[in-house]
Amino acid sequence: MKGNSTVLICFLLCAISMEAQSLLSKRLEGRVYSKEGDVAATHVLNITAQKATITDVNGFFSISVKLNDTLVFSAIQFKRKEVVVSPKVLESKFLLVPLEEALTELDEVVVRLYNLSGDMGSDLNNLETESVVTASTLGLPNAYVKPPTQAERQFFEATTGGGIVPLNPILNAISGRTKMLKNRLKRNTKYERTQRVRAFYPDSLFVKDLKIPQESIPDFMYFCEVDSTFQAIVDTHDQLKIWEYMRKKSQYYRKNNKLE
Image (tube, rainbow, N blue to C red; front, side, top):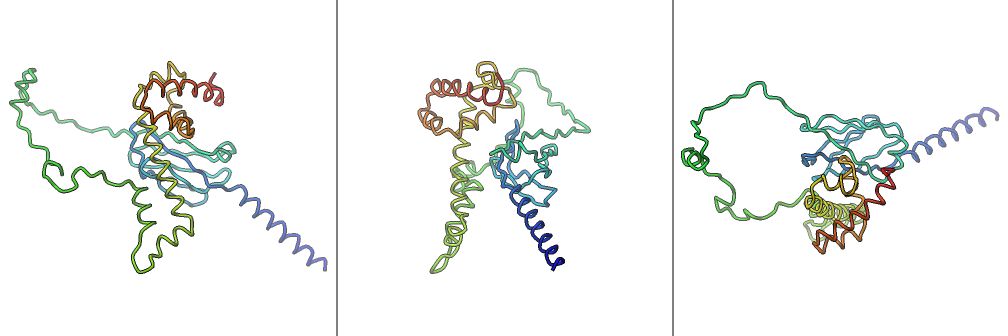
């Protein structure tokens, strides 16, 4: 009887331990970014849990993590980046990961002589240049059609299907994949608009006028982006009104991040 009690206690302790571990794990969402802006298909690896994913065209990702896991961010054009999942990271709703460009140095540079005079007009006339070949210059159909993004392609695939009764849309609706992809489309559209807003103003204005550190500008833009009021103001296309909104919003951002 005593032996059975010991086995039962051990079993309960193991179950409690496993339950505690599962409670500590969560689905971490985030975005990688860089000055170059080309962050699509960056590899995100949880080397502790042996799990991996890749970012979408705008750098967004989602991966399962738990405390003290090590995340590795890797792409050909960027330096390898490691992030340890600390309690602060685990509690955060969104993780922003800056990536540093991996510069490739050339071993040898060849300079060719073109007998340039320094007069741009005459030099352009003397240079032999080949015509640029593009889909539009060749007159190909759909030359000006914007290709769908990865999120748009995935949503189309999830909501279409063949047969008398298309099963693909039904299965994706039941599993929640269609809703997830639809939300991703909305998020990407919102992010693209936010990036266009940032392009209206030089970074020096964010630093000097709003007192937002250079490295925190993407995080500040996301802080504005999640506010529905910001989206309504962006729709006015009034740059002065947008800037005034961001000026007021920057006060809350600096206070929340102890930048005062």
